[in-house]
Amino acid sequence: MGLLSVLLKIASMKKEKINCVKIVGGGLAGAEAALYLASKGVSVKLYDIKPLNKTPAHTSDNYAELVCSNSLKSNDVYGNAAGLLKEEMRLMGSIIISVADNTKVPAGNALAVNRELFSEQITNKIKSNPYIECINEEVCDLSGDLVLIATGPLTTEPLSKAISSIMGSGLHFYDASAPVVTAESIDPQYSFVGDRYDKGNGDHINCPMNKEEYTEFYNALISAERAELKEFEKSDVFEGCMPVEIMAKRGVDTLRFGPLKPVGLTDPKTGRWAYATLQLRKEDFEGTMYNLVGFQTNLKFPEQKRVFGLIPALKNAEFVRYGVMYRNTYVNSPEFLNIDLSLKDNPNVYFAGQITGVEGYVESAVTGLVAGIQIYRKLKNKKPLEFSDKTVTGALLKYITTKNQDFQPMNANFALLPPPNKIIRDKKERKAHLASISLDAIKKIVKEI
Image 1 (spheres, one colour):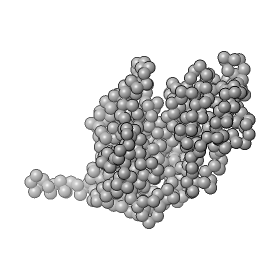
Image 2 (cartoon, rainbow, N blue to C red):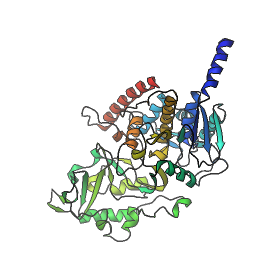
Image 3 (cartoon, helix red, strand yellow):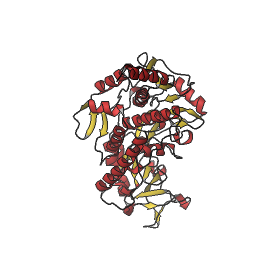
Image 4 (cartoon, rainbow, N blue to C red):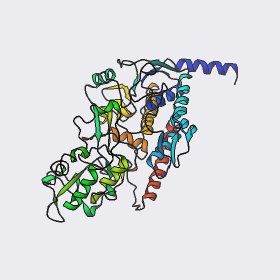
Protein backbone atom coordinates (compact mmCIF):
# COMPACT_ATOMS: atom_id res chain seq x y z
CA MET A 1 0.00 0.00 0.00
CA GLY A 2 1.42 3.39 -1.04
CA LEU A 3 1.90 6.36 1.29
CA LEU A 4 -1.04 8.24 -0.23
CA SER A 5 -3.35 5.26 0.30
CA VAL A 6 -2.25 4.96 3.92
CA LEU A 7 -2.86 8.66 4.55
CA LEU A 8 -6.30 8.48 2.92
CA LYS A 9 -7.22 5.47 5.06
CA ILE A 10 -6.09 7.21 8.26
CA ALA A 11 -8.02 10.34 7.28
CA SER A 12 -11.11 8.25 6.64
CA MET A 13 -10.77 6.51 10.02
CA LYS A 14 -10.39 9.83 11.84
CA LYS A 15 -13.49 11.13 10.11
CA GLU A 16 -15.50 8.15 11.31
CA LYS A 17 -14.35 8.74 14.90
CA ILE A 18 -16.62 11.81 14.97
CA ASN A 19 -19.43 9.38 15.69
CA CYS A 20 -19.55 8.48 19.35
CA VAL A 21 -21.63 5.85 21.10
CA LYS A 22 -22.05 5.72 24.87
CA ILE A 23 -22.13 2.15 26.18
CA VAL A 24 -23.05 1.54 29.80
CA GLY A 25 -21.82 -1.80 31.13
CA GLY A 26 -18.65 -3.77 30.44
CA GLY A 27 -20.11 -7.27 30.62
CA LEU A 28 -20.38 -9.66 27.70
CA ALA A 29 -23.00 -7.62 25.84
CA GLY A 30 -21.30 -4.26 26.34
CA ALA A 31 -17.90 -5.65 25.41
CA GLU A 32 -19.26 -7.32 22.27
CA ALA A 33 -21.00 -4.14 21.13
CA ALA A 34 -18.00 -1.93 21.89
CA LEU A 35 -15.57 -4.14 19.99
CA TYR A 36 -17.91 -4.48 17.01
CA LEU A 37 -18.43 -0.72 16.70
CA ALA A 38 -14.73 -0.03 17.19
CA SER A 39 -13.93 -2.50 14.39
CA LYS A 40 -16.04 -0.25 12.15
CA GLY A 41 -14.15 2.87 13.17
CA VAL A 42 -16.84 4.19 15.50
CA SER A 43 -15.70 5.97 18.65
CA VAL A 44 -17.06 4.38 21.84
CA LYS A 45 -17.15 5.55 25.43
CA LEU A 46 -17.46 2.45 27.58
CA TYR A 47 -18.68 3.14 31.11
CA ASP A 48 -18.34 0.64 33.94
CA ILE A 49 -18.03 0.96 37.72
CA LYS A 50 -14.98 -1.33 37.69
CA PRO A 51 -12.37 -1.23 39.09
CA LEU A 52 -13.36 1.60 41.44
CA ASN A 53 -16.42 -0.34 42.57
CA LYS A 54 -18.06 -3.72 42.02
CA THR A 55 -21.45 -5.33 42.36
CA PRO A 56 -21.73 -8.05 45.04
CA ALA A 57 -21.42 -10.73 42.32
CA HIS A 58 -18.15 -9.50 40.82
CA THR A 59 -14.58 -10.07 42.00
CA SER A 60 -12.36 -9.26 39.01
CA ASP A 61 -11.33 -5.85 37.69
CA ASN A 62 -11.63 -7.11 34.11
CA TYR A 63 -14.46 -6.66 31.66
CA ALA A 64 -16.62 -9.57 30.48
CA GLU A 65 -16.28 -11.35 33.82
CA LEU A 66 -17.96 -14.76 34.02
CA VAL A 67 -19.52 -14.61 37.47
CA CYS A 68 -21.08 -18.08 37.64
CA SER A 69 -20.02 -21.04 35.55
CA ASN A 70 -17.08 -20.98 33.15
CA SER A 71 -19.19 -22.90 30.62
CA LEU A 72 -20.86 -21.29 27.63
CA LYS A 73 -22.90 -24.49 27.28
CA SER A 74 -22.99 -26.94 24.39
CA ASN A 75 -20.91 -26.62 21.24
CA ASP A 76 -23.15 -29.05 19.33
CA VAL A 77 -24.31 -27.01 16.36
CA TYR A 78 -26.88 -29.50 15.07
CA GLY A 79 -28.20 -30.88 18.33
CA ASN A 80 -28.28 -27.99 20.77
CA ALA A 81 -29.68 -24.46 20.35
CA ALA A 82 -26.86 -22.96 22.44
CA GLY A 83 -24.32 -24.57 20.11
CA LEU A 84 -26.22 -23.33 17.08
CA LEU A 85 -26.36 -19.80 18.48
CA LYS A 86 -22.58 -19.78 18.97
CA GLU A 87 -22.11 -20.86 15.35
CA GLU A 88 -24.40 -18.06 14.18
CA MET A 89 -22.27 -15.63 16.18
CA ARG A 90 -19.06 -17.03 14.69
CA LEU A 91 -20.46 -16.38 11.23
CA MET A 92 -21.36 -12.83 12.26
CA GLY A 93 -17.83 -12.21 13.50
CA SER A 94 -18.38 -12.31 17.26
CA ILE A 95 -15.23 -11.41 19.17
CA ILE A 96 -16.63 -12.87 22.40
CA ILE A 97 -17.00 -16.31 20.82
CA SER A 98 -13.63 -15.97 19.08
CA VAL A 99 -11.91 -15.36 22.42
CA ALA A 100 -13.90 -18.17 24.03
CA ASP A 101 -12.68 -20.56 21.33
CA ASN A 102 -9.14 -19.32 21.94
CA THR A 103 -9.29 -19.81 25.72
CA LYS A 104 -11.31 -23.03 25.88
CA VAL A 105 -10.53 -25.81 28.31
CA PRO A 106 -11.48 -29.52 27.99
CA ALA A 107 -15.20 -29.90 28.73
CA GLY A 108 -16.50 -32.66 26.51
CA ASN A 109 -19.07 -31.30 24.06
CA ALA A 110 -19.36 -27.96 25.85
CA LEU A 111 -17.45 -24.75 25.28
CA ALA A 112 -15.88 -24.00 28.66
CA VAL A 113 -13.16 -21.40 29.09
CA ASN A 114 -10.37 -20.42 31.40
CA ARG A 115 -12.43 -17.61 32.88
CA GLU A 116 -9.50 -15.45 34.00
CA LEU A 117 -7.75 -15.71 30.63
CA PHE A 118 -11.03 -15.15 28.78
CA SER A 119 -11.83 -11.91 30.62
CA GLU A 120 -8.22 -10.79 30.46
CA GLN A 121 -8.07 -11.15 26.68
CA ILE A 122 -11.37 -9.30 26.21
CA THR A 123 -10.17 -6.52 28.51
CA ASN A 124 -6.86 -6.21 26.65
CA LYS A 125 -8.69 -5.93 23.32
CA ILE A 126 -10.88 -3.18 24.71
CA LYS A 127 -8.17 -1.17 26.44
CA SER A 128 -5.76 -1.37 23.50
CA ASN A 129 -8.36 -0.28 20.96
CA PRO A 130 -7.87 3.37 19.97
CA TYR A 131 -11.59 3.77 19.28
CA ILE A 132 -12.68 2.78 22.79
CA GLU A 133 -12.38 5.12 25.75
CA CYS A 134 -12.84 3.32 29.08
CA ILE A 135 -14.49 5.43 31.75
CA ASN A 136 -14.62 3.96 35.26
CA GLU A 137 -17.59 5.57 36.95
CA GLU A 138 -21.19 4.88 37.85
CA VAL A 139 -23.61 6.20 35.27
CA CYS A 140 -26.69 8.06 36.43
CA ASP A 141 -27.24 10.22 33.34
CA LEU A 142 -28.29 8.50 30.11
CA SER A 143 -28.13 11.54 27.88
CA GLY A 144 -26.13 11.34 24.67
CA ASP A 145 -26.60 11.06 20.92
CA LEU A 146 -26.57 7.26 20.98
CA VAL A 147 -26.68 5.24 24.19
CA LEU A 148 -26.53 1.47 24.70
CA ILE A 149 -27.54 0.21 28.14
CA ALA A 150 -25.89 -3.17 28.62
CA THR A 151 -25.96 -3.61 32.38
CA GLY A 152 -26.60 -7.04 33.80
CA PRO A 153 -28.87 -8.48 36.47
CA LEU A 154 -27.32 -6.34 39.22
CA THR A 155 -27.91 -2.91 37.74
CA THR A 156 -27.10 -0.30 40.39
CA GLU A 157 -29.89 1.62 42.09
CA PRO A 158 -29.02 5.07 40.62
CA LEU A 159 -28.88 3.63 37.11
CA SER A 160 -32.13 1.74 37.64
CA LYS A 161 -33.78 5.04 38.54
CA ALA A 162 -32.30 6.68 35.45
CA ILE A 163 -33.63 3.87 33.25
CA SER A 164 -37.05 4.15 34.86
CA SER A 165 -37.07 7.89 34.22
CA ILE A 166 -36.57 7.53 30.47
CA MET A 167 -39.02 4.62 30.20
CA GLY A 168 -41.65 5.91 32.58
CA SER A 169 -41.84 2.42 34.06
CA GLY A 170 -41.08 -1.11 33.04
CA LEU A 171 -38.25 -2.27 35.26
CA HIS A 172 -38.74 -5.68 36.86
CA PHE A 173 -36.95 -6.80 39.98
CA TYR A 174 -37.82 -10.46 39.99
CA ASP A 175 -36.69 -13.16 42.30
CA ALA A 176 -37.98 -16.37 40.78
CA SER A 177 -39.36 -17.95 37.64
CA ALA A 178 -41.07 -21.23 36.91
CA PRO A 179 -39.71 -23.96 34.63
CA VAL A 180 -40.72 -24.10 30.96
CA VAL A 181 -41.23 -27.31 28.96
CA THR A 182 -41.79 -28.02 25.29
CA ALA A 183 -45.39 -28.62 24.24
CA GLU A 184 -44.54 -31.78 22.34
CA SER A 185 -42.99 -33.40 25.41
CA ILE A 186 -46.17 -33.11 27.51
CA ASP A 187 -47.86 -36.52 27.58
CA PRO A 188 -51.40 -36.14 26.15
CA GLN A 189 -52.42 -39.44 27.77
CA TYR A 190 -52.15 -37.83 31.21
CA SER A 191 -53.21 -34.25 30.37
CA PHE A 192 -56.05 -32.29 28.85
CA VAL A 193 -56.58 -28.84 27.35
CA GLY A 194 -58.96 -26.42 29.03
CA ASP A 195 -59.40 -23.42 31.29
CA ARG A 196 -60.87 -23.25 34.77
CA TYR A 197 -64.68 -23.51 34.57
CA ASP A 198 -64.21 -23.45 30.77
CA LYS A 199 -63.71 -19.68 30.94
CA GLY A 200 -61.13 -19.02 28.25
CA ASN A 201 -59.87 -20.12 24.87
CA GLY A 202 -58.16 -23.33 25.87
CA ASP A 203 -54.84 -21.66 26.62
CA HIS A 204 -53.89 -24.10 29.38
CA ILE A 205 -52.80 -27.71 29.48
CA ASN A 206 -53.87 -29.41 32.70
CA CYS A 207 -51.91 -32.18 34.41
CA PRO A 208 -54.13 -34.11 36.87
CA MET A 209 -52.87 -36.30 39.71
CA ASN A 210 -54.69 -38.80 41.92
CA LYS A 211 -54.01 -38.97 45.65
CA GLU A 212 -51.22 -41.57 45.37
CA GLU A 213 -49.45 -39.64 42.60
CA TYR A 214 -49.77 -36.38 44.50
CA THR A 215 -48.44 -37.91 47.73
CA GLU A 216 -45.37 -39.29 45.94
CA PHE A 217 -44.75 -35.92 44.27
CA TYR A 218 -45.27 -33.99 47.52
CA ASN A 219 -42.83 -36.11 49.53
CA ALA A 220 -40.18 -35.79 46.82
CA LEU A 221 -40.70 -32.03 46.62
CA ILE A 222 -40.29 -31.22 50.32
CA SER A 223 -37.11 -33.32 50.57
CA ALA A 224 -35.48 -32.18 47.30
CA GLU A 225 -32.13 -30.39 47.28
CA ARG A 226 -32.22 -26.63 46.82
CA ALA A 227 -29.66 -24.32 45.23
CA GLU A 228 -27.78 -21.98 47.54
CA LEU A 229 -28.40 -18.26 47.33
CA LYS A 230 -25.60 -15.72 47.42
CA GLU A 231 -25.28 -13.70 50.61
CA PHE A 232 -26.54 -10.48 49.03
CA GLU A 233 -29.68 -12.28 47.82
CA LYS A 234 -30.70 -13.98 51.04
CA SER A 235 -32.31 -10.98 52.74
CA ASP A 236 -35.08 -10.30 50.25
CA VAL A 237 -35.11 -12.98 47.58
CA PHE A 238 -38.24 -14.67 48.94
CA GLU A 239 -40.17 -11.46 49.52
CA GLY A 240 -43.43 -11.62 47.54
CA CYS A 241 -42.40 -14.73 45.62
CA MET A 242 -42.73 -17.98 47.52
CA PRO A 243 -40.88 -21.00 46.06
CA VAL A 244 -43.19 -23.97 45.56
CA GLU A 245 -41.01 -26.23 47.73
CA ILE A 246 -41.24 -23.76 50.66
CA MET A 247 -44.97 -23.39 50.18
CA ALA A 248 -45.36 -27.18 50.28
CA LYS A 249 -43.72 -27.39 53.69
CA ARG A 250 -46.58 -25.41 55.19
CA GLY A 251 -48.79 -28.48 54.98
CA VAL A 252 -49.56 -31.48 52.81
CA ASP A 253 -52.66 -29.83 51.32
CA THR A 254 -51.24 -26.32 50.87
CA LEU A 255 -50.48 -26.83 47.18
CA ARG A 256 -53.96 -28.29 46.60
CA PHE A 257 -55.39 -24.95 47.65
CA GLY A 258 -52.73 -23.05 45.69
CA PRO A 259 -50.96 -23.80 42.39
CA LEU A 260 -52.32 -27.38 42.25
CA LYS A 261 -55.94 -26.41 42.91
CA PRO A 262 -58.16 -28.79 40.88
CA VAL A 263 -61.37 -26.78 41.30
CA GLY A 264 -63.11 -26.02 38.01
CA LEU A 265 -60.87 -28.28 35.94
CA THR A 266 -62.98 -31.24 34.83
CA ASP A 267 -60.91 -34.09 33.43
CA PRO A 268 -62.77 -35.34 30.32
CA LYS A 269 -61.42 -38.85 30.91
CA THR A 270 -63.11 -39.12 34.32
CA GLY A 271 -65.79 -36.42 34.17
CA ARG A 272 -64.69 -34.99 37.54
CA TRP A 273 -62.07 -32.86 39.21
CA ALA A 274 -58.79 -34.60 40.03
CA TYR A 275 -57.23 -34.76 43.50
CA ALA A 276 -54.67 -32.14 42.38
CA THR A 277 -54.02 -30.48 39.01
CA LEU A 278 -51.04 -28.55 37.71
CA GLN A 279 -51.81 -26.01 35.00
CA LEU A 280 -49.38 -25.26 32.19
CA ARG A 281 -49.68 -21.91 30.44
CA LYS A 282 -48.43 -20.91 27.00
CA GLU A 283 -45.01 -19.29 27.11
CA ASP A 284 -45.13 -18.09 23.49
CA PHE A 285 -47.85 -17.10 21.03
CA GLU A 286 -47.42 -20.23 18.93
CA GLY A 287 -47.81 -22.52 21.95
CA THR A 288 -44.56 -24.45 21.44
CA MET A 289 -43.57 -23.90 25.09
CA TYR A 290 -45.51 -23.98 28.37
CA ASN A 291 -44.57 -22.81 31.85
CA LEU A 292 -45.56 -24.55 35.08
CA VAL A 293 -48.01 -22.07 36.60
CA GLY A 294 -47.14 -21.09 40.16
CA PHE A 295 -44.05 -23.30 40.27
CA GLN A 296 -41.38 -20.70 41.03
CA THR A 297 -38.59 -22.74 42.52
CA ASN A 298 -35.09 -22.74 43.93
CA LEU A 299 -34.47 -26.47 43.47
CA LYS A 300 -31.28 -27.56 41.76
CA PHE A 301 -31.80 -28.26 38.07
CA PRO A 302 -31.45 -32.09 38.23
CA GLU A 303 -33.90 -32.09 41.15
CA GLN A 304 -36.44 -30.12 39.13
CA LYS A 305 -36.32 -32.68 36.35
CA ARG A 306 -36.60 -35.57 38.82
CA VAL A 307 -39.34 -34.15 41.06
CA PHE A 308 -41.53 -32.46 38.47
CA GLY A 309 -41.14 -35.55 36.29
CA LEU A 310 -43.17 -37.42 38.92
CA ILE A 311 -46.25 -35.58 37.63
CA PRO A 312 -47.58 -38.13 35.11
CA ALA A 313 -48.01 -35.67 32.23
CA LEU A 314 -44.41 -34.48 32.68
CA LYS A 315 -42.68 -37.84 33.01
CA ASN A 316 -40.89 -37.27 29.67
CA ALA A 317 -40.89 -33.47 29.76
CA GLU A 318 -38.14 -31.62 27.94
CA PHE A 319 -37.15 -28.57 29.98
CA VAL A 320 -36.11 -25.58 27.86
CA ARG A 321 -35.67 -23.46 30.97
CA TYR A 322 -35.40 -24.53 34.57
CA GLY A 323 -36.83 -22.45 37.37
CA VAL A 324 -34.38 -19.98 38.86
CA MET A 325 -34.33 -17.74 41.91
CA TYR A 326 -31.93 -14.85 42.24
CA ARG A 327 -31.82 -11.11 42.20
CA ASN A 328 -32.30 -9.77 38.69
CA THR A 329 -33.26 -6.63 36.83
CA TYR A 330 -34.76 -6.60 33.37
CA VAL A 331 -37.00 -4.36 31.31
CA ASN A 332 -40.44 -5.28 30.05
CA SER A 333 -38.96 -5.60 26.57
CA PRO A 334 -42.17 -6.56 24.72
CA GLU A 335 -43.72 -3.27 25.81
CA PHE A 336 -40.75 -0.95 25.51
CA LEU A 337 -38.28 -2.27 22.91
CA ASN A 338 -38.32 -2.47 19.13
CA ILE A 339 -37.00 -5.66 17.58
CA ASP A 340 -33.72 -3.85 16.77
CA LEU A 341 -33.35 -3.38 20.59
CA SER A 342 -33.98 0.36 20.47
CA LEU A 343 -36.41 2.03 22.83
CA LYS A 344 -39.81 2.64 21.22
CA ASP A 345 -40.14 6.12 22.72
CA ASN A 346 -36.50 7.05 22.11
CA PRO A 347 -34.86 5.17 19.20
CA ASN A 348 -31.45 6.61 20.11
CA VAL A 349 -31.40 4.48 23.27
CA TYR A 350 -30.66 0.77 22.90
CA PHE A 351 -30.61 -2.13 25.35
CA ALA A 352 -28.55 -5.33 25.32
CA GLY A 353 -27.62 -8.18 27.63
CA GLN A 354 -29.62 -9.77 30.43
CA ILE A 355 -31.47 -6.54 31.06
CA THR A 356 -33.43 -7.24 27.85
CA GLY A 357 -34.79 -10.51 29.20
CA VAL A 358 -32.42 -13.04 27.67
CA GLU A 359 -30.90 -15.66 29.95
CA GLY A 360 -27.31 -16.88 29.68
CA TYR A 361 -23.81 -15.80 28.73
CA VAL A 362 -24.07 -16.40 24.99
CA GLU A 363 -27.60 -15.04 24.75
CA SER A 364 -26.43 -11.83 26.43
CA ALA A 365 -23.45 -11.52 24.11
CA VAL A 366 -25.52 -11.96 20.95
CA THR A 367 -27.81 -9.09 21.92
CA GLY A 368 -24.70 -6.94 22.31
CA LEU A 369 -23.57 -7.98 18.84
CA VAL A 370 -27.02 -7.25 17.38
CA ALA A 371 -27.19 -3.86 19.12
CA GLY A 372 -23.75 -2.99 17.76
CA ILE A 373 -24.81 -3.95 14.23
CA GLN A 374 -28.04 -1.96 14.44
CA ILE A 375 -26.35 1.13 15.93
CA TYR A 376 -23.74 1.09 13.17
CA ARG A 377 -26.49 0.88 10.54
CA LYS A 378 -28.22 3.86 12.16
CA LEU A 379 -24.97 5.83 11.95
CA LYS A 380 -24.81 4.95 8.26
CA ASN A 381 -28.46 5.97 7.74
CA LYS A 382 -29.43 2.40 6.91
CA LYS A 383 -32.59 0.61 7.94
CA PRO A 384 -32.34 -1.85 10.85
CA LEU A 385 -31.21 -5.30 9.79
CA GLU A 386 -33.95 -7.93 9.89
CA PHE A 387 -32.95 -11.18 11.59
CA SER A 388 -35.02 -14.13 10.44
CA ASP A 389 -36.82 -15.94 13.25
CA LYS A 390 -35.56 -19.14 11.61
CA THR A 391 -32.25 -18.30 13.30
CA VAL A 392 -31.78 -18.62 17.05
CA THR A 393 -30.63 -14.99 17.09
CA GLY A 394 -33.79 -13.80 15.36
CA ALA A 395 -36.04 -16.09 17.41
CA LEU A 396 -34.64 -14.67 20.66
CA LEU A 397 -35.16 -11.11 19.41
CA LYS A 398 -38.72 -11.99 18.46
CA TYR A 399 -39.41 -13.57 21.85
CA ILE A 400 -38.22 -10.62 23.92
CA THR A 401 -40.07 -8.05 21.79
CA THR A 402 -43.38 -9.85 21.20
CA LYS A 403 -46.35 -9.08 23.43
CA ASN A 404 -46.41 -11.45 26.39
CA GLN A 405 -48.48 -10.95 29.53
CA ASP A 406 -46.22 -13.24 31.54
CA PHE A 407 -42.87 -12.14 30.13
CA GLN A 408 -39.90 -13.80 31.80
CA PRO A 409 -36.25 -14.24 30.76
CA MET A 410 -35.53 -16.92 28.16
CA ASN A 411 -32.46 -18.78 26.94
CA ALA A 412 -31.75 -20.25 23.52
CA ASN A 413 -33.78 -23.34 22.65
CA PHE A 414 -35.17 -25.05 19.57
CA ALA A 415 -38.76 -24.46 20.69
CA LEU A 416 -38.30 -20.78 19.82
CA LEU A 417 -37.80 -21.63 16.14
CA PRO A 418 -40.73 -22.07 13.72
CA PRO A 419 -41.56 -25.78 13.32
CA PRO A 420 -40.34 -27.46 10.12
CA ASN A 421 -42.72 -27.52 7.18
CA LYS A 422 -42.68 -31.29 7.24
CA ILE A 423 -43.24 -33.85 9.97
CA ILE A 424 -39.97 -35.14 11.44
CA ARG A 425 -40.67 -37.40 14.39
CA ASP A 426 -37.07 -38.13 15.33
CA LYS A 427 -35.93 -35.34 17.67
CA LYS A 428 -32.29 -35.46 16.57
CA GLU A 429 -33.24 -35.27 12.90
CA ARG A 430 -35.67 -32.43 13.53
CA LYS A 431 -33.07 -30.38 15.43
CA ALA A 432 -30.47 -30.98 12.72
CA HIS A 433 -33.03 -29.92 10.09
CA LEU A 434 -33.84 -26.71 11.98
CA ALA A 435 -30.12 -26.01 12.45
CA SER A 436 -29.49 -26.32 8.71
CA ILE A 437 -32.29 -23.87 7.97
CA SER A 438 -30.91 -21.48 10.60
CA LEU A 439 -27.38 -21.55 9.21
CA ASP A 440 -28.62 -20.92 5.67
CA ALA A 441 -30.61 -17.94 6.95
CA ILE A 442 -27.78 -16.47 9.01
CA LYS A 443 -25.40 -16.70 6.02
CA LYS A 444 -27.78 -14.48 4.04
CA ILE A 445 -27.87 -12.02 6.94
CA VAL A 446 -24.07 -11.99 7.14
CA LYS A 447 -23.92 -10.83 3.51
CA GLU A 448 -25.99 -7.78 4.49
CA ILE A 449 -23.79 -7.13 7.53
